[in-house]
Length: 432
Image (tube, one colour):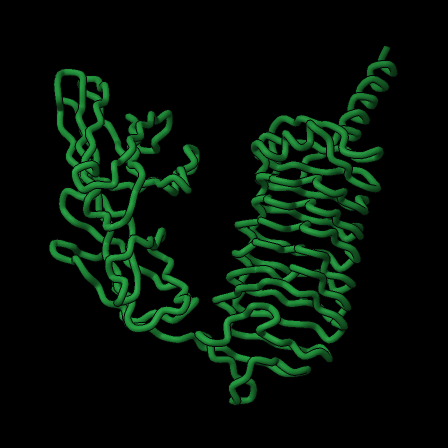
């Protein structure tokens, strides 16, 4: 009986060792499924997804569903040699750890994912087209030192990348592989023998290091040469020769501020703007108003309705001449108790100085705006039509929090995206 007890205890602990071990930092329960003939995925409560096994990861309906929901981190363990096409397309993970056993990443494998940094192990020799395309949050990229081809559109429209260093191992850069709009620095490796055309439109590009044996002609890649002055060895040029480095400097514009009566700014107002380089515009305040950023245009179009949608963004310049005129965009807001169980909100968008199609309000009894309710109203396009009233049912003793948004026909705010709603702590109302 004693020996039987020892045997069962030993068997129990042996079974425990065979269970999938969570990665470092992972905790809690686990959901699992297959993702290839010899590979499995494990999803832990802390948002970590682990891929374990050998050979190729193949996508599956359950893997796609799981990777789009609550994944914060993907860890691909050693033994996996290939990631099939579309495997992590739209994945919500911000962090991806890849093993040194990995040799291939398939087409669109991480397209439209939320990864912020890519560190590609040197074991990778092949990356498919659009593998990391439309990754809006991808900022840092390290490519494999054994990569031979930069495939078509591999980073297309992943515009948060600011520096791209192409290793000496790369021999061919395919079409659209360099289409990264806000790239600031590009390094072309020594091994490059051919470069496909890319519509770079890189207005922020200021440094190009060309170590290859090819001439890099800026106009062929739609790189601005009129509003950015490019120089190699101090001489103006539009061609970065083999083995040369070019530096660019954008045209500067004076910034003129209008309609500033009663307005205070939180931070310095920039006096000049360099073409293609984001200017940090301050937040603005005006009593009884909600601030929605800055309108802008050049002096001769001062009545224009073009928007600056973010206070950290400035116009790209285009073919503009003269000064850039900026105007704060405000909506007047009044919140009052209408009756025992109603709040009335009056909005006047006539001082936005831009064409709008509508205004929206959302409200909640929680400052985080959890479980908020939303209302939207169309505007007529005339000054009087910019004034709208919203009536909201409310409970006595409750505190209500309000946020507002502007929208037009071309763009309607995503209801799940809080960044599109302008928030003012003064827009808090407590029912008496």
